[in-house]
Image (tube, rainbow, N blue to C red; front, side, top):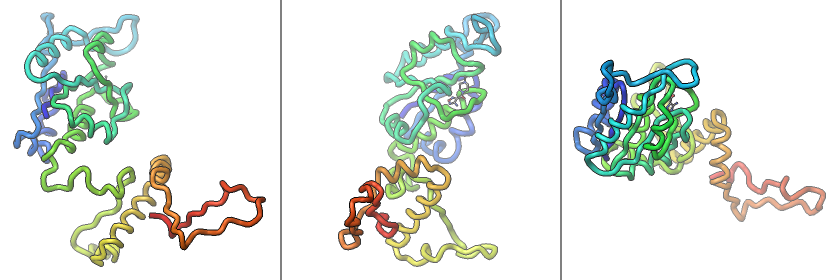
Length: 261
Ligand code: 4HQ
């Protein structure tokens, strides 16, 4: 996959794309990430890329001309790209969306700075994406976050690490606790079940832990998961409904804690 990033601060990207898993993916040719300096495309003698907003107000707005020229130059060669603007007014980024974007041959990411970009730039943009409901100083960190998140779904990038598609039994839940050697550290031990070698018990324990954590920290995520994974009611454990009709059927939950998957 190729990703072109249009920014006023190309120097911000070197460390992130040069190290760790992304660095290896680039070195192996699985990912090709190029940054482009928008300021190099300015056509005024001061190389100015931003200006005061019409109508007044605080801050500066990124000018249309340097962005149009930069995008035209970058897209004049290579495959067509899906063009994305990073902005808090975009659709919140999700794993599902990242998985879809990883199927694209080429992405172009536009990083806004200051108070945003001239609205006419939107005629060049296919999608607006936000990495969360908070305001940053620029779109560079969001572009790095999106690139990292998408790269996990590009075949080969995770290499010997766990595939991004694994651990489906806790998909949509927060992570369960993990431990590595030694089994005892400063008096703190590892739960016995993880040392037992009993795979089914380990899977059950991890799901229980993931469910408990999710219920406490992200109740809306927990409810969504429970709705998508209804408790299985085993035939031999089915509770009898009361014989009277004084209790509404909805108030009787035929499932029980032992019946959870
Ligand atoms: N910014 N998710 C303001 C963000 C942001 C976000 C990018 C700061 C755009 C103009 N981008 N500039 N949150 O806060 O994507």
